[in-house]
Amino acid sequence: MEVEVDLTPGAFFYVTVGLPDAAVKESQNRILAALKNSGFDAPVKKITVNLAPADVRKEGSAFDLPIALAILSAQGIVPAEKLKNVYITGELALDGRVKPVRGILSISVAVRKLGGAALLVPAENGSEAAVVEGVPVIPVENLAQAVAWLNGEIEIPLARAQIPPLEVFEHDETDFSEVKGQHLVRRAIEVAAAGGHNVLMIGPPGSGKSMIARRLSTILPGWTLEEAIETSRIHSVAGLLGANTSLLTRRPFRAPHHTVSDAGLVGGGHSPVQPGEVSLSHYGVLFLDELPEFRRSALEVLRQPLEDGRVVISRATSSVTFPARFMLVCAMNPCPCGYATDPLKECKCTHVEIRRYRRKISGPLLDRIDIQVEVPAVKYHDLKSEGESESSRDIRARVEKAQKRQEARFAKSRIYRNAEMGPRQTKSFCRVNAESEQLLKMAMERLGLSARAYTRTLKVARTIADLAGCDDIRTEHVAEAIQYRALDRGV
Image (tube, rainbow, N blue to C red; front, side, top):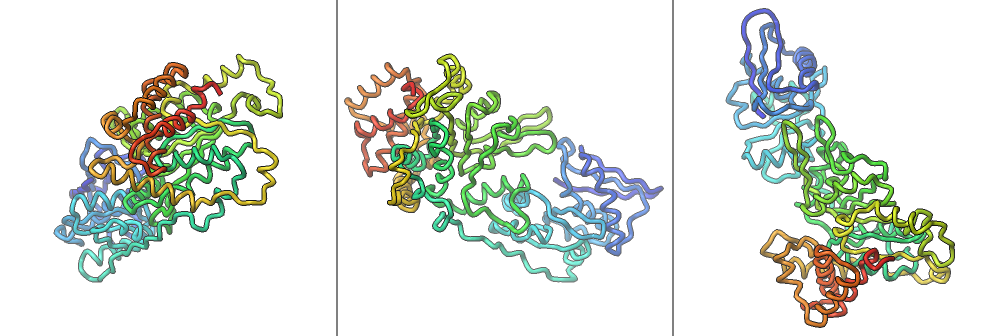
């Protein structure tokens, strides 16, 4: 955005043009008060502020500082050449203090692409903006300090990024060693983490579905700085990054309640458009507990981000795209009362009620969930066992080894995990022998697998082979992958 100010002799009049929203229109009172309280004379003239491009709606309070400096430049207090190729953002308080704004990380990335000479930001946003290398970030406390720096009267040290170590849950309070029994489910979760596959767990209440899901993040491999920056940008835009936080250190884990709206789940709302839970869980985990309790419309809008890895929110005047490359982990009961698969408790639901309950989840959505696994009730001897289960650290070591094989396989493409493979990659890297092909044919005929489910079964088999350190997909890998289609098998 470019800010232009014109001062015309005459009675005082202040107007802002260029599709400003209410927050931008109200900025004139903040700006005039900040100029006066910072020791500058507000011009008693007709002030015209133009925000270009004029056909794009302007939102938020980040225009305060640029407009104030543009007014001072029009008065000759700040030379116009000093503002050349300098990018500025910040909200003004009435006393001239510069207050932090949202989305500073995205602004810094944009300035790097544009080749800006400097980025003038609120002091509280300095560390966050400096995370992006190659951008000289000037943190300012108030309007007077910004003017003094532009005029060369003072030197302001460049902001330094305080990048915390990207943690990998070495000493976390949650660990897979706390999960008793459930060896099949633990194996399925390990396969999902290794290949980035979506998971659905079906089991009675108290079987440990939520407990296992919340420990999935502890076995995911550490993420790169680029991934951390991209995810932090989304949280920064949403205002969730925190005042003293420059970067997310862990992969996000989001668990919205089943009453969440469509816009809350995938993003949207009125001005300004906000990212939803699917984008806030970018490069992390989105956990939907009690899946059938979510509104059908909210679940159906998940289909596009699950397929494309992004969310496109269209409005009459604009279109916004948010990244949404996440692992979907879901949990549900097998029936309304929850005890259809429990051998000890009687299920009180009729067949009609069970079918109606499961039909709340559409077939196209289930097709996009690679792994569907049954979670049985925990047996007493497993619960009282004194020995600890395998720790998250040990499982993560195998997951990281499998992901390194995938990185080498997809080194020349933009794919990072097996779950992201398209038809061409699936055909190339998921070849099976005649025996495995016959097994898949039987599964499609007896279980009624769709073409999408067939492809996803091959991807899961490829991940199982990677965990086993095999270059070829063997029959046992395909057989295990077929076992992870619980709802297709009528469980």
